[in-house]
Length: 63
Image 1 (cartoon, helix red, strand yellow):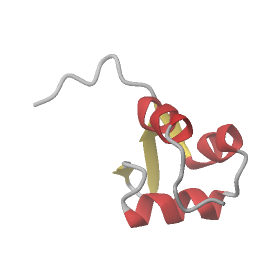
Image 2 (cartoon, rainbow, N blue to C red):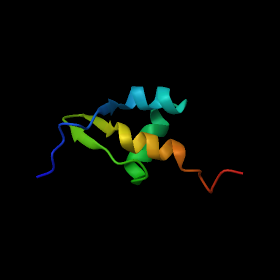
Image 3 (cartoon, rainbow, N blue to C red):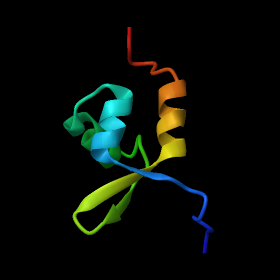
Image 4 (cartoon, one colour):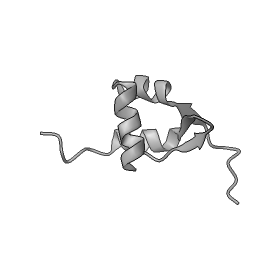
């Protein structure tokens, strides 16, 4: 089992605020698999490192 003690998880609302998109956009990214997430009950938590990687990686669909 992986050691998750150093991983910081963010809520969908926190990710949406960081990425400057709507909550629905974050849910779409999670459901499409573009943004990895862990489900806790009825909510999702996204690793902060995954958000940073998504922000740093240019999207080839834009433009």
